[in-house]
Image 1 (cartoon, chains in turn orange, purple):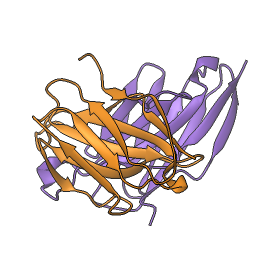
Image 2 (cartoon, rainbow over the protein chains, first blue to last red):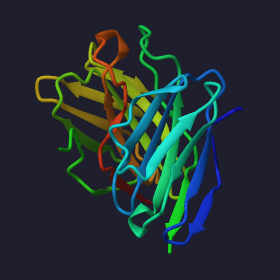
Image 3 (tube, helix red, strand yellow):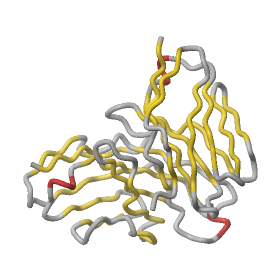
Image 4 (cartoon, each protein chain N blue to C red):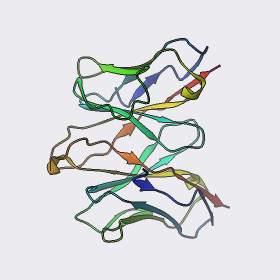
Length: 117
Length: 117
């Protein structure tokens, strides 16, 4: 597609429920990132994918958080047994091939606003 | 440990004047730096970047300066326009050619710029 697409735009869920957030990166971008922005905070790194593998999961806050990427394209971030502190805007970004001689910027989607009540 | 710091949460500037946004980093391995702009309810938008082999990069009204010895970068916007009012994030990463690995972008906490008409 023309840009990074995330769905849903907004999600309200009850505490304890599981949620799935989806990201469609820019076609041809092999690197995909998940970040989250809590109220009044900066962008917190969660995980990144190179192709379908995730070399760096260091930012996932707990084992309730997981992510996968299939076909080198779509990625899903899953939060199990949601808690109120999970409320945030979850942002996905993608970029061109890493490891090349040229650095590249990441392009962000519009985000999914998650509210846990 | 905050590897990328934006110590000014907010900045107000008169239209037509220069806006200077500052960013400091601690990791000497960072060699690629970016600035993003974010409007409410939208994802961050890439503005300008700079590689560590340069100390200045200019794109229209936007100029980024990098002082490696001080581990400091700044974004200059001149002349400032009301439409520039947004939150500005700086980010840093380690490029693939250094082979160090994770390639993730580390973001600062952002500076809210308000350009007064």
